[in-house]
Image 1 (tube, rainbow, N blue to C red):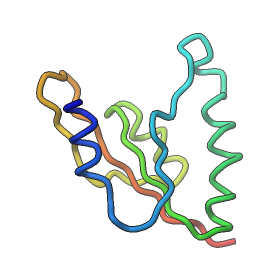
Image 2 (tube, rainbow, N blue to C red):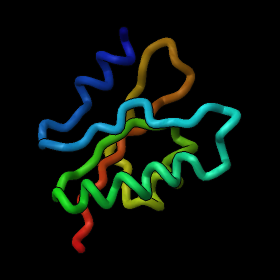
Image 3 (tube, one colour):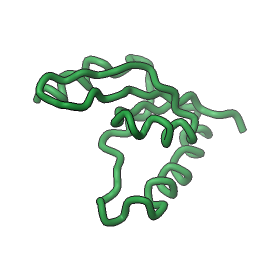
Image 4 (tube, rainbow, N blue to C red):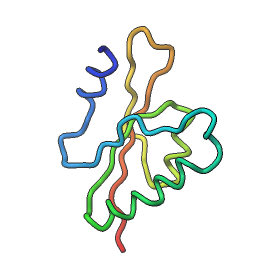
Length: 94
């Protein structure tokens, strides 16, 4: 419940597409599944001129950065060892 409260409080009020719990099964990781999902979805958001928002572990900041996401803050949650990062992506023009 605490992590949900922290995430909810940090979410931007600007209309956006929320990529909640985006991830791949551990057996499917590093096989391009997540990349394929983002590559198929992000152009749709761009066409609709919608930004996107997500939270991720610090080690995934550079991964999402390749898709145009920029780190916007940190989300500390008591009881978790990891401080999550919030990330935002503006829609890309044509």
